[in-house]
Image 1 (cartoon, one colour):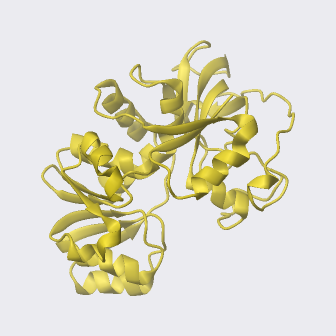
Image 2: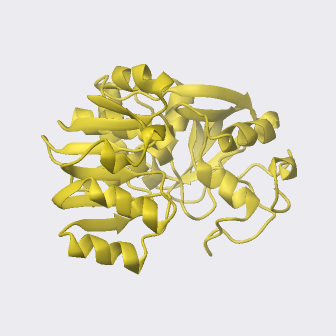
Length: 309
């Protein structure tokens, strides 16, 4: 990507093959997950200082074959299948044929996942895990609401919450309710029927992947019992929302996903046990990245989109 703009700014370009330094591995990419952050950085609507400015190679999810290892690497060898979320929010440059990653940010691919599924798991899976387990402090028996439950983060959050013993409620369009049931959701809500607090209450944790303004977040707060936790992903947690949460005896937090080897291992263990799967909506060849970005921005993706080499 040479400049910010619409999907048309994406271009294939020949670059030198990267070389792993000490503690790093070189992966020959099989699949790279596409996430909302990719389209936001491409358009210029979200640009943390760590990312810098164009030209840049996008992508923070990767699954591939280890082809070379740097000095000191012990957990992986050439020929291993590996996956991870390198470097976020710094550039990881995963939308490429070869990716260099820190050994600390990648793991062997779970045997139960294809390369495409593994490529779609890290960023969305870590977001869901960190939101529910770390920020939401979810416990077995909790009533948990996952908004946009059929999306990339949402469909993984449903499975994680269910695997950890929660009663899981998800929002999605009615035609996706069977999909949510197949993931393990106990209840599904049609989000166009009206404000969510009219449909559900007495929740312990709400994972809000939708609301981008104070009014939406305050409505999410209204679904929580006293002592409940709201985790904000899509929007910004303002002083107003925090104040309302405090007045109601509830906790509101926001988070940005970060590399986390222990959490990634937990996701891999769930996948190995058959309790976590990645639904691949569609896979696009790398040269069709612009089409993949258009599909991502349509808001109608169920599960994950992938770029493949």
